[in-house]
Length: 162
Image (cartoon, rainbow, N blue to C red):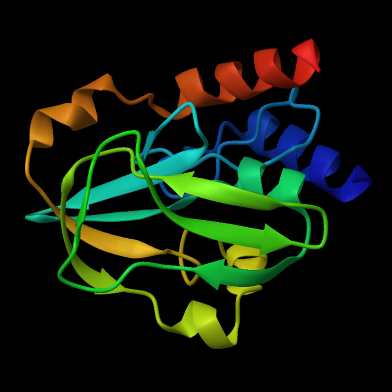
């Protein structure tokens, strides 16, 4: 934890851009990373919209609270998801949590690596630990999601309330 505090302080002192590096809030209790360029749901899923496809996964904050992920239940390619409705589940040593879709659309790809290596959600929630790729049916739904700063503030307030 001391290393993360030092890294965050150093990054702030050097005024490093958060465009390509994780955004670390010095006030965050869990020091989870939040990336610029992604959209976030208040149910702790992220969306990266590129072209006609949106990649969805759970946030670093969510995986941090879950603990070690031991099993991931994902839907099949070709199905559909609806905004704010569950599409899968993540089981950890602490609990099982439903995963909701932050947007509606058709599932065009599922991260099959997670069935063999569910811990990718812990080690790389924004890269290797993505869950599904969706062709959005209503791209305007992305506008209702939070940006990095809003999500960081949301997490801090949520953690303070617990």
